[in-house]
Amino acid sequence: MNQVAMITGGGGGIGGAVARRMAAGGITVVIADYDGSAAERVKDEIVASGGKADALAIDVTVAREVKAVVTDAVKRYGRIDVLANIAGGSAYTKRIEEFTWAQWKEVMDANLKGTFLMCREVAPLMQKQKSGRIMNTASNYGVTGSALRTPYAAAKAGIITFTKSLALELAPDLVLANTVAPGPTDTPRVMEKESAEARKQRWWPQIPLGRTALPPDIAEMYYFLTMPESAAITGQTFHVNGGVVMP
Amino acid sequence: MRLKDKVAVVTGAAQGIGRATALAMGREGAKVVVADLQAEKAQSVANELQALGAQALAVEVNIANETSVKRMAKSTFERFSRADILVNVAGIYYPKASVVDLSEEDWDRTININVGGNFLCSREFVPAMRAQKSGRIISLASAIGHYGMRQFSHYAASKAAVMGFVKSLAREVGVDGITVNAICPGSANTAMPRQHRSEEEVMERLRATPLPHILEPEDIAGAILFLASDAAAFITGQSYNINSGTYMF
Image (cartoon, rainbow over all chains, first blue to last red; front, side, top):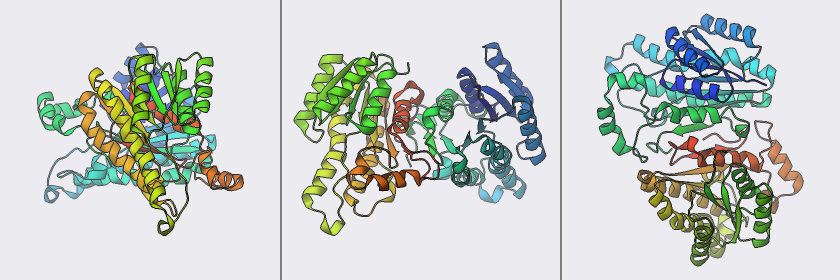
């Protein structure tokens, strides 16, 4: 049976790599992104290489949009087997006293609330199916914290524990929920702010494997969590970070 | 074939998780060294692998004995000329004893086999991996290494030590393209828990997990296979829990 995956942030660096990896593995991917045209581009690329994909725009912090998108996907495909919540990001680097309440909420919502809303909408469907795989996205900063990223680190720590709680709730229905925690990854979004050379100087000496990640390095972990051989894994956090953090 | 032409050394491969790992790797195209203290059982797993069309070599090894480990490495290089993957599964669990009743001999034996064996085997294969600028070392730790267990302080300490060893080795050899990780299984459907529990107790515990999925050796082997594959190139120093949701670290 053809699996169907919904991937938020699927138009971005890591999300796009996850969509491509899952599609290459024969999964039909619904690419949802705040930037609808980015989602379209990833879709076109996948379709051109023989995969099955759909693209749409979504703001995961708006409950009615989440509901509409999930309802629509279910109408179209009849099921959702995989939900990869990748939408999110740190957005700001600034001292706590410089964070406005609006900015704090913006970061918390994009990461934590978006994950909650997506899971709330998709989980009942997976419970009915008696199968499903949910992957939420944290960061090594969700474990170590990060100066100048207080809301981001808090949201990512929140995602880890949210996912454990969700895993316990959904386990009786064979729905699995795990967290992937990527380390420093060269995505187009971070490369806009920092040159490859600057990233190399800053990161490479700190990382035991001697380099930063590329999005496909991270995507493999999401793909593993869709496979039959990960059927006994739930509530766990998978750090993929070249060894920069070893919790 | 995710491990085509890779040479994998699996200790403790005569039974349980080690056997499932050896078979899974053989199915994925690896040439497998089936290493175990139980030579006859190791040979029968090697035979199973050959029946699957995989190349396999059974080797008798005591992982807590330096000479024996060196002999295992020598046999590996003589037969297959290289080593790409080392999976440290061999270990012991018994005896059950509270700290005040635990003998020094039993303490030493557990630590020497469970952690010392990791050290001796890793030390023997790292130079070849370093020379080829690639390698995968995967060691079996345990959820018990995180949360402890009454009457198994020696086992818990040894498995926590495995995680510390794995992290340190990962930091040492990362620059050479070698990844080092641990897998922490929950209680699995193997012979090990049956050493100190009745069949009924074992099955009851296996069914008492949040996820209604009895943890089989193949579930652990699947995660080991992933870490051994190219897909896990950016993962090192991690301890991944596979336990049907029993414990979430």
